[in-house]
Image 1 (spheres, rainbow, N blue to C red):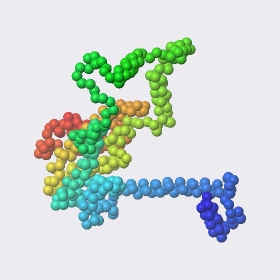
Image 2: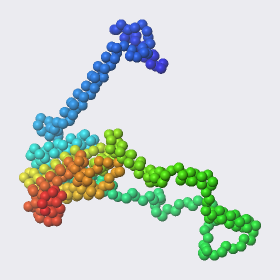
Image 3: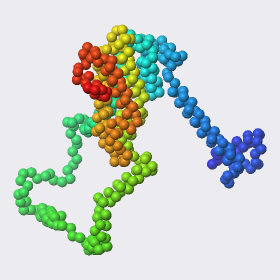
Image 4: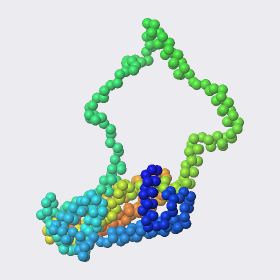
Length: 399
């Protein structure tokens, strides 16, 4: 409070130089203070909300623009365009990585010279530009399969720090060791005074331990009173299973109301968390990666002079088929949470699951595009008839 009073007095001394301020040095204590203060507060709040909305709209408009500069990809202005593009794809920053994949998709669709430059860049350190781009893109897609597989893995067994052969230090015994040999043989007669006392104490404890407990008079009175006052229907309603059923019905009714929406764990929410990962959602990056490698592979029929892409076509098709199959199996086998009161069996087909249905559409359309482009060369590429049949089935084409 002392700091506030000092700050108020210090501010008031400067304010008196420009405004006609009351002589009182203390702030008013009775609301609403003054009607002009309320008007200024309302106008300031409205202007602040307007500023937030305008800033948000301007930011969304800026980010919605394609990653182009003067009609060319952003990396065209650098000394090593392919290297800058690969660095962006490998970036750990989500925004940089997303724009890099978006630029990759833009190049695959409308910049023939850049595509030819990527295909022809085979002398890069480590591997060719196409192989590095393909590895990063397929890694993004394979992460879906890995996350789904990790869900089904059992938890690892806990072992001691030293390994399985580590012997834990034994604690001191609090009783005599267990008797070995024939345990049903009669016990030997006690010889010493201590053994006789121990034998008598054991007999008394055994007698009271094996004898059934008798109900006290109060318990008998409570039971008889309950039977007289409550009907059989009321007694059944007070059973634990009946009370649990009634509570479940009440909770289910609350979950169906707008109040229960924040407490639902819907099938769509749980499925998106497993497929896309948490806490960030890489859906846009996955869609860009799927479409980019598809269009790059299809354009290689005319743009790839050195034949660096045709060796990777089987890997691309197998990855897309495996990812599509993993998502479909996961949706069909995933359990439904008890709080999901609006679950429909159509959700298991990917319908009404935002994000997953879009990803499945892109995967199927990419497979269809690749099959149409390379089915005539399947034998030369190393794809068997069974793999082509599985790919057509995953793409929704007639087998």
